[in-house]
Amino acid sequence: MSGETKNPPNVVAANTQKFDLWRNTCNGIVQASFTSACLLVTIRYFGASDTAKSLLAGGSSIGFLITPLFLLLIGRSKLPVSIICAILVFFVALSILASAVATSAWFYVGCVLTGCVIAAQVPSLMVHVYANNYASNERGRKISGNLMLSAIVGSATALLIGLMLDKNLSYFRILAAVTFLFCLGTAYFHLKIPSNPLMSESRGLSKDLAYAIKDRLFFWMLTGWMLVGIGNLVTIPLRVEYLANPVHGLDLSNTTVLCITMVIPLICCVGSTPIWGWAFDKFNLAYVRISINLFFLFGLFLYFQTQNLTLLNFAAALIGTASGGGTMAWTLWVTKVAPKGAESSYMSVHSFFTGVRGVFAPFLGYWIIANLGPAQVSWTSASLIILSCLVFLMLASNQRLNSKKT
Image (cartoon, rainbow, N blue to C red; front, side):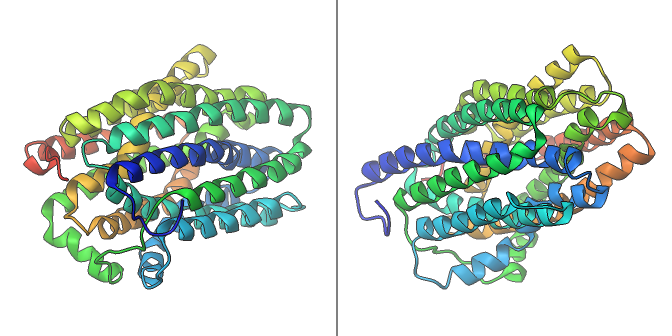
């Protein structure tokens, strides 16, 4: 079922959840290949520079920077959102396929970077689908189940990728070809999700940014998200770098690296996601975000303070638990704050600032680890996350964070 939504709300919600479940199944495999695996290949197969690795890590963030312009342009089309998403994912698939024939670090990075930039446009469109197809008091529960499946599939995929790359790093080409097929599957199931053409008040980033100026709650929510976002993003590429690069004293196998950076976090993400989904629907958004932050705080701090495998696995579990709530909260929080009909505009501003922090954060992270060492990465991350907690604590009394809009 694609095109404009014409069925009763309960049928629309059921079809959305069913086909989004299949979409997330395919997408879990694609994401597992797109995150740690690509960075691992860049480090160990191509021996890429810190600049290339930083660009690769910031690929999605570069995409978020152009999200407001993309939404402005695509909003003028009359295509249902599901069709737009399918077209985007098809081009992501082509970029993945092109990476399979890469013979140089920069060509490989360019292909993956292109795919990440295009894929980053999908979340802002999907929030439009979720806001229209699900009631406000069921979004967290319905989406959390699909995210759980994506995490389960992703963890199994990451383990398989690690085992294959330990046998032969050149197998990344076969993996890219297989990922291409699953990306096509993701595009197909996007087409099946019921949706309408994008209808929002967005007239460009400059006009959308006015929401952040006029709406003080939105402004401070963005500030809190900016702080925790930078605290998390400076560490993302370094989690692989720290374990895989012998200069830091660990030099673990590809399978071990992917188990710590992907498998364990995704398993814990699966276990925690329904709890976070329930909390998102039932509790004050500020307190939910603070709780997520605390798991990130302790997990990221411990991760870069130890070389003990048991403690690294425990830190990875904390990070995974935080990610279970973080992914869902990142996707849905604007639906609690934005006025009806302005969700995509609020999301475009949120995505833009995600891009701003995500572009420079990997460069900052690599500079810190190269010049100050891994321990200082954890101190920087912890300081920013604590500041974020204080911002959200200040906002907790705002009744809009408790609202149950329909």
